[in-house]
Image 1 (cartoon, one colour):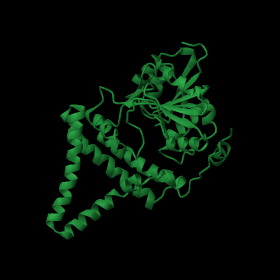
Image 2 (cartoon, one colour):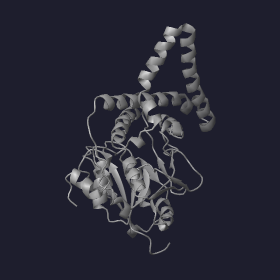
Image 3 (cartoon, rainbow, N blue to C red):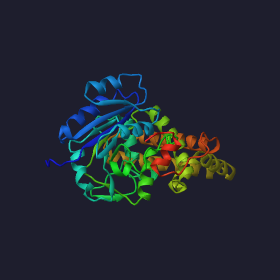
Image 4 (cartoon, rainbow, N blue to C red):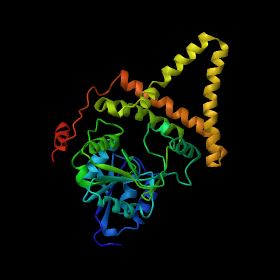
Length: 346
């Protein structure tokens, strides 16, 4: 391996991640990359479990995130990081041994600011988690994001998900810190601002990791409720990041109620037809999941995963639309101005 490899800082925001943090850090310790060429920074948002102790015992640098959000964790992590490249991921990920090594060659192009790759489903993921992973393999359920999808060749994309995104530090410093009013989706804002500066994003099949999805239904519900809120916040700052799929999903509950009301008014036969159509759609994804995963148990949970994605997203989306928690978010893309907005000194 060449001796002129760049120093890389792996930044992982965490909060109460004791369930996953050990296997995540163990995978990072086994990377096929010189030990003196990378560091691991755990940016902790006031965990009250054993996350910090586990991370420290495995040699990671543990810092205070200074806020409760993933955004705060990444802001603080970048300030602490020493790397020429900054690798963002999550505590519920397990990295391939060549994760960092394979990413480096793509940065030879100065216009490339971010390299990401597949977020695969671990073999020991829960049945519900595998069902979530299955629905995320369709852009219909990810708002067009490549998250959860797999491409077998290098592709230029407009977004790499924050769980598997390795950035050129010099590019990040032009747009960071990101306002922490973006409670979720800070990776979308980061990538939008970098793209506006003319940088390129690559999806590379050999820069891979395994990502535990929302392994339990309650967690998945809460997560999608937050995502619905976060998408409205993003849309206020960048209307172009709120696409028709987001809006339709966001108002899916009233749309469903309206369709059912019209169907009931039109007569029992029409109502039965509408309900049957909905059942057929869920049955289609059930059968497709059964064929692809070869697991009846996973397929059986796919309709539930779809419902647990759609309903809380719509609830969160409508809540923030009609009862906004934050009325105005700046479109600031200059790092100095963003810092002043947050009263952060550089």
